[in-house]
Image 1 (cartoon, rainbow, N blue to C red):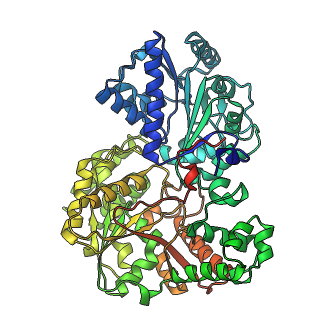
Image 2 (image 1 turned 90 degrees about the horizontal axis):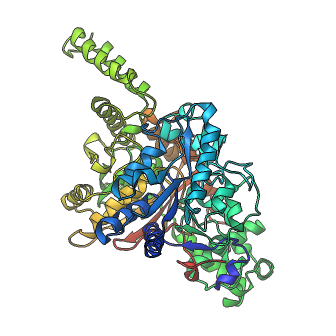
Length: 636
């Protein structure tokens, strides 16, 4: 499909590629700019962003400096924003973020790095913002501005209502933005109420603008920014008016674009089995008819005449898609028996949240199941949970030999003193990190016992990349891969389950998947079949899923009871994502929605349904099939 066709809907040039490819290309653009300006004897002025999305770009920039000799001596930087109030040395400060993730690793002189200050007295903020604008002008303006996008559509911290001519200023953060930041600050009440940010006009004056978005949780707002009308309620839509703006998306973030979701609405498509299934399901929902009731005129009236023409009439197409969907449904009798199975769970509750129903069926089918918890999940435990267990131990010391109440009291008091000295979001002392790890491990063991396994079936890998004590993690290293590879070589599974979702707010699922896939790449012998499940945020669609596992009401209740065993994550989990529902509520809703969708398509009406994608080692899980012409291509 030609790019001019995409331009009917997409009002900004869009490039869709894999996460690592985005980092390589954008860092390459920056490197070319830096070198070109150096050859001209000029400075390269970069506008920089924070958050998880640009981390891959910064890592590639560091690699280019270290391995290819990219010289940053002629670079001047201006950061988009900073929380207010915020100490520069705080773990949440964007000053610290930039030092740790870029500035300390390349040769940009500190005096040439400009980040808004969140530690000023209130009466100095306005002058500081004006000075920030002056420094940008004196530097000759920003050559390339890097952006992310918030769930409210903000760029920088330009929240809904920000006007096009706004400049660097202090503003109050939107409730959605503060809710999304709550996980970083261990509670929304700890998120600073205000921020300093470049204005929309300042951003639009950059000679080039690059916006990055990855993950399914960005798909909805990306659609609004790229295809919606320009409006102050979504600041990112102002980029449509920029002459040199480009949006980089991974397939997950691009999933709601018309070219991906319903490409037949923007022009001719190259029909594949997957797109045929998507189109028939879409048409069934549009017409509120079961698949087998769709008629020729339904297809023609909804821009699908070319599809039905391939089959001469609707009946054979309807039958093909209906049979393909029903063949995906596997009850217990069609599931594996007597197999060696390893289930990788990024956090100590993802297994029961995402595949608790199937896990129970696998146990009942006499498979040998090992659940490998890849990270400790300790940062997702509130301090009050530790205090509750300390109180339990203190009381238990009077009835169980724990060294005597006096000894126990001294130990408890020491831990409570360390907890009391913390600021919200500070890194826990080592003993507290270990206690939180133990809490998660005991909950995980109890949860799988609810599904018929025992504590002996659990392996706690505690991968090193996670052991930062902070939301931000280290890159996956050889040590992480080796731990996973050793487990695979020991157990020699015929089937491996892994989290294949990309919407995890802080990237842990993505990194755990990387560790599994890289370990499988060096696996000796016949590779196992991989089953990808999704976490608490998004389920596989029925067209992209290859296996659909029905659950009875009794099995759904058992799954929920297993989730309840993770008491530290109940009621108010520290990392809920953008969804206010508890994890068990999301699971019940999404599993029933999948079953209800199948029923509306005319398939058997089950109570609930889990969805999986299966493939052989070496293949790659994709968030959604992208039309071939759009991969890595500008749209507009």
